View 1 (tube, rainbow, N blue to C red):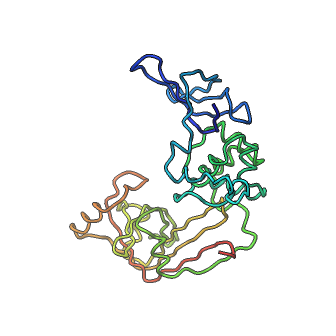
View 2 (tube, rainbow, N blue to C red; view 1 turned 120 degrees about the horizontal axis):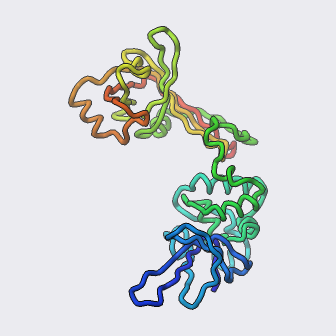
View 3 (cartoon, helix red, strand yellow; view 1 turned 30 degrees about the horizontal axis):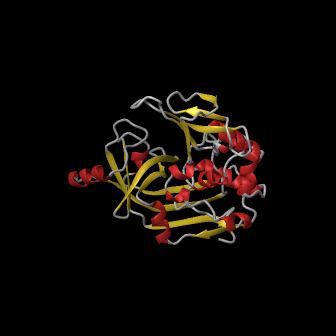
Length: 306
């Protein structure tokens, strides 16, 4: 019996029709993957040391995951040459933890095989973790943090309550303007953006709002007595952006144009039906405001070679 971190240990009940028990292998005690194992049981979330008996078997991660993860296993020739160490294999998007792991690994000039060896895990599991949204256990994160010379808090994004953009700048950044078509694509259909407006006393204010894009108009719900409601019947600026601290990249889109209150009952019903989410701030926010962008600009920061 041989296992990797992340594999599942399944213990069948000796009684016919009896319940079985399973858990995730979160710790190895031998480099060759032989027992015993530290197992986090799915029914109790407890971690115990297990010496598997004849009623136990291993369900490997690459067998349990979708085909993208299984496809991460290289051929014997590729493994010997190390040609797939840093080649993307999955078709999905990496999770935040996986991206932080990949960035830290590359900063230290480590291959996946080297990192997996230091962390005592399968390189296939590390590939899956870097390339797909995953939820590694605390034991896995501790081993990875130790292998990469960082902390579990850093891999988890411990600075989540800090303003974005505190990471190191790219060595050779490239700042380029976005076309109106790119700006419309980045605005997408909905999200959180910021509206800049002058209040009744003349002071400029910027507030975040949940927004939708409907027929090229930016619309949001608010309360009639809110600061955001003062955008109505004025020219306003609306900004949305994304900052990726892990990769030191980001973009921003700025829309400028007149704002108006949507009063037609049929139009209001249509907006409510098409809304993807209710305002995060909660409360009664049934006043719809629409911004018709007269000017749409944006910028993106990427590595110079992209």
